Every structure is written in C-alpha cells, then in structure tokens.
Amino acid sequence: MPNMLPENVCEEKMFSVIYKKYYKDLYHYLYYTFGESLEPSDKAQDAFVKLLNNCKKITPDKAKGFLYKVAKNAMLNEIKHQKVVLKYKIIKPRLYTNESPEFVLEEKQFLEKYQTALSKLTEDQRVAFLLNKAEGKKHKEIAEILGVTQKAVENRIYTAYRKLKEEVEGFK
Image (cartoon, rainbow, N blue to C red; front, side):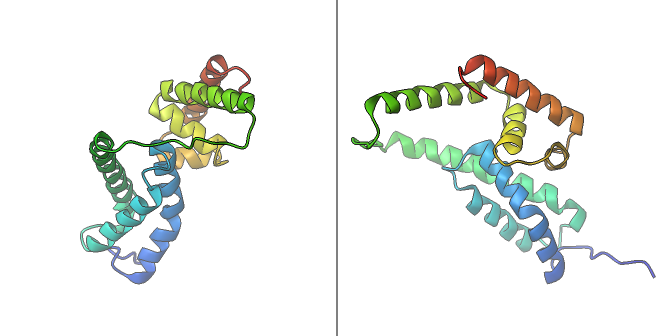
C-alpha cells in the first residue's frame, strides 16, 4: 500500500511539517531581499496564516510557492505603505555617541560604500550573496530556496563578491 499524501495542508501534522521545513528559509529570503525594518518575521508568519486559511485549496507540493509568493507580496505592500508613512514622518537621529568622531566617520563612510555597492548588485546577486556570506548557507541550499541551479548560485555569489571588492576599499 503506497504512502498516501494528503491532498491539502489542513491536517495538523502536514501543516506542522511544512512550517518546520519552510519557515526559516522563508524568513531569511524576506530578510535578505527586503531588510529587517519591514519585519520579515511577521510577514512570514502571515504567509503561514494565509496558507492555513486556504489549506483546502493548496496541495503540499504547492505550499512552498504559495508561501513565498504571499510573503513577497506582503513585503511589497509594506514597502508601499512605508513610502506613505515617510512622507509624514521625520526621523530624528541620535545626537550622541560613545565612539571617537574619527571612528564614527570611518564607519559611516564604510557602511555607505557597502550599502551603495550592495544596491548596485542585481537582486539575484544580492540575495544569493547575503544568504551565503551572512547566513552561511551552502550553494546547494540557496539553489533550492531560489529555485535555480547550483551553478547559477555560484556565479551570482562570485559576481557579487567581485563587484563588492571593486566598489568597497578594504572589503574581504
């Protein structure tokens, strides 16, 4: 008798398996694609809530695609919302620091160069690079998350690294 897979994710065990399998990778994808300020953890959780609400319509093999699409759309909606909020809000920076002025200036300049260099990368390069270097994911894992070949991931990371070295002095 073959092992019968459920046709939807409504069963508690199946939903639990999907949650444990995809939550961490979904969170990291959102974090490295959109940043921390948009609360990727909340958007990942919301995606799972929507999956649970639509569990009768979604089969387990389609769950990953559904989660990534819903979470990405939620982040894009949040970006639109933040643009409206920024029109009406003035952010005041801290006026003090414990570091020396020279250190603060050097750090600020380095971070600006790094952020500028990261922003010049394509989204594919940036996501692959950050998943690899910041999160320590292996090329094979990144390929599975992004749905591309391992060779494509290697190329994206190498290209991103090369561009960052060119743009940012002292980048290693």
